[in-house]
Length: 154
Image (cartoon, rainbow, N blue to C red):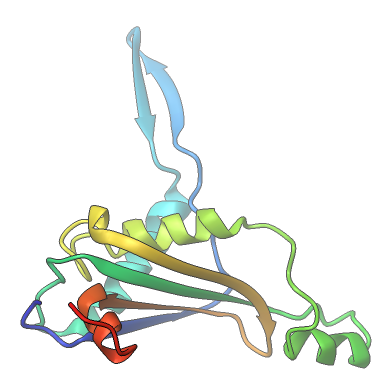
């Protein structure tokens, strides 16, 4: 296990954003690729939030669990009864962005900051839901620690 805390939780206020598709271009007969600016900016915000949360702790260097909860605000046009049903989890946000694209933004944004490399992610729990505010909250923890807390063995 690493020298750092057993887990790290990073939160970012604002609507969840998915990873944008890489764009291609041809310049001088050569094919090139780039990540859209909106995606680069969002991943930069994720990295900054993680660095502030981690302070001087090193990134995980062992298999980790990645738990993400993306919260969407309830549309203000919905009637009160439907708004309450959404907040208590009776309605789910089956809308863009796709949950896997949100997770990709976060796993890439935390790469090299919360963990040495995103190849260390061996377990993921992902959720989209409604709530009164729209944060994305991610917890990263060493799998050995998670197993110990659940009563398992290393």
